[in-house]
Length: 339
Image (tube, rainbow, N blue to C red; front, side):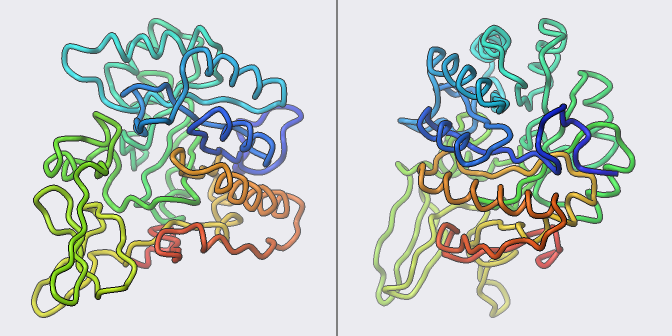
């Protein structure tokens, strides 16, 4: 099995490189740096990166679609939050606008919204968001057979061997994250942040909102808090990670540390050959809230690595550690180093 089942004539060999864009400028940067496809969202709560100053108006999205298409790049629209009760029309309007603007695929998580899109816009290509947390062949077959989903973004809790087994069992394409923020909870179940702040990542598009983050000094320690909860303590002068509940420190039985590993970013560049052999159709970079400099560096590095692998050359040396959380990186569950 290869990782290129969805590729059309004239496209580069190997898995697709899927790149983030939080602004029109970032989209242009991703396209120029070598993206095969760019994913972005409207500037409202229908997408899971609903931060001030980010995302696209309808007019900006129309221009983005034209810009990408003229350069042979696909545009994927994330409508990947779960609709609020009584406000379903905001999400259906996003799907309607996606179809009207001619995006290449829409990324959805909610069952009702998938049903709406499948029936109202049968020609619109559907991708299943990582927020749906479809982590086994039976779940993926359900989405593919019920709604016609063509690709599933897999949660970041699977090993390479587990991904290969899924691809052997399903006809649906799979996409995996290879760089950026590493959520160590099953995606789509971010209830802890909602409990602490009243803002849910998969309802409001905000994980650990800055308005609820506070740092204070206690003795010789710097304490990081989210709402009413202490998330971490570090020695005075040491780097303090941003307080997200899933990466908080815990003390139990005389041990103090993190449940999985210290806060770090995902970097699976060295696993490109294994992921391609496992049948992955696309490799995804996280970071719609990141700068153009970040986009240019990360997309360019992964473009060179994917092209080298496709040509049978050794992977080029690349060091993106300076762009990683805490300037440290991990392969996460792909090698099952923390589970």
